[in-house]
Length: 269
Image 1 (cartoon, rainbow, N blue to C red):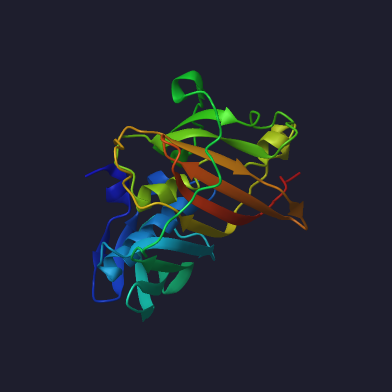
Image 2: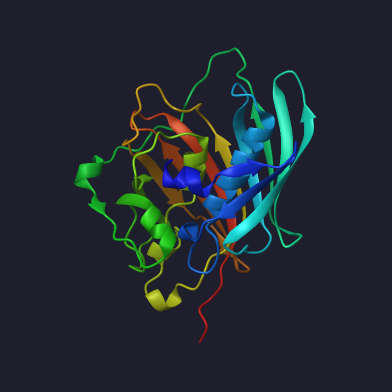
């Protein structure tokens, strides 16, 4: 079993309830990684839906408090399930209290033509982009990143922009679960716009919304493929920060669009 699948594995207790062993290998600087928690909740909801034709179309996650590594439960509830769409919620519970809450929509495909107006940016391939060095934080070792957007963290860049080619540390076919993790895999886009590492502080996420734009796996894809990730922040006000993300396949297929809001915590003096 791939390490990511082991770390997000849920065990069904009854129709609506699952258990999970939260892995400390998916922890950030101060708390569990948001993309990891979102993937755990999504896995439980996919198990509850039980219909591969009903693919995840949107997922919104609110982070209430940080869970601890170890045993937790996921409580799911189907709010409505019709001919093609299912809407449901999930709560990650620990010690009887919710730590993370999600609402998601799952839907079968509708007939009709499509279009994609946001093209993948023209950038050099992954082999031409410098591989970033992971920090001592556990979650940084779960990915391979090759930066091609924005400045280096704390370089005083003109834009709050970062990103590049990404994949999991060990080859794995990209599905909605791995895509969810990769939507939250890079450092905050704010960091390149800062001129000093002492300004870093923390940017804990309040809520994360993912719109899935393609059904995975994309035809012709391979487990070792990279995706191209572009993140930017456009506003910081009253201590709250936005961050948007677009992810493309190697062939330029738009896989996901995300937006998250975070709290900008200044470093302690």
